[in-house]
Image (cartoon, rainbow, N blue to C red):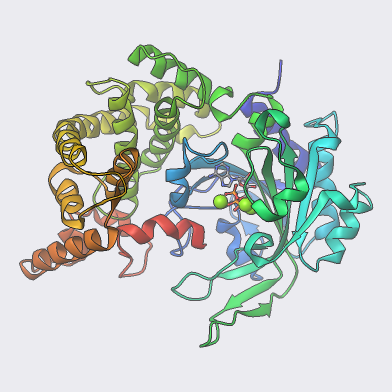
Length: 484
Ligand code: ATP
Ligand code: MG
Ligand code: MG
Ligand code: MG
């Protein structure tokens, strides 16, 4: 039988233990620093160590080599779920890190060994490709030397693809960064007839799947110059930060079409099919996929202590759950059903993440309560929006005010409205929506003696550990993950 997701996670951690790494547990989905709401990468809990802080991990020991499986939530990818073959909203990032210890040669040869050795993943070498930063001759030499990759399998890109993170957030400097080298797997002609050389132009392929990003953080990003020129200062030493998506490698190793047929998602998808009476037949069944993926994210986020609310993390979690609810509704489910999927998530993920087991009852109850609330309003909203869209011509625009009323009265996040409108070929006046929202917020603010967080019905805990003015507006929350 092919390796399970749990087997792959364990093998990864064991492989790097065998190379002298200390295994540490995943950090919470709540970000360790205020640059993002949620943890978005395996490296995020280690920014201090990359910057030169002692590599001491109380309760675990000291080590300049560390390995983890980190749960990450990428808000910017929520809308990709169900649309691309490669994006989850919650992902597990398998990582190995060096704090001024080993560098490129070990990182790239170990990655190659883990992927291709029959003892580990045993992938077919002839399906692997790599990208490097434009002038990174060192990486080129390692790929074509020790790893034996022919030069035509290596593409060079600029900072947009092969420097991580590519940009500083608007707020200011974001610390450790550097060039990177990524590993791609050719899923074969069943996914497209494009070639690797063409990927240089398209940068988008269902066939060539990015599986592993090996980053070489050697700079500390400073405040850019007034004209926007980036300022990179050398870090005290050179580091390694790698991240491989567990969902992606599992899908490749199990040789299934996509995430939704792997050992974690398939049983959830099957349960969705059973509950709805609608068989799952593949990627065309977007709703099954969205429901299965989102229930996993929301379960983890709630288990980590984020309560569903109208601000910050709680708002994002609610938005993900509502998106799942809407898709369950589209499948014909008119009663709360998502909460009955939680036990499958717990069964599949609870071994690696005991917090899921410990909080299972609380997660189920929170999901059910939110489903009940949302179903009531959803019905009204879908009817109202359907009525509006039914009278509109393709290519026209729904007014910002209409979108705001849907949000305000029926709890429709604007992205949901956009998604439904898209099905009618109608766009949404987002600027107008933002204006209406701002106006309503000002009115509410003027009538309240309380601060922002109370004003938005907020749960103060959503702001724990964040700067005093973390509220950046709903739309920016969507891009924040991409920014880090
Ligand atoms: P993509 O270009 O496919 O969006 P990325 O370049 O944004 O991926 P990185 O920031 O390099 O991803 O993250 C490291 C690895 O994490 C990726 O190589 C991939 O295996 C995995 N990964 C990133 N985003 C997702 C996601 N939304 N769902 C599943 N896996 C992901
Ligand atoms: Mg990428
Ligand atoms: Mg990448
Ligand atoms: Mg991405």
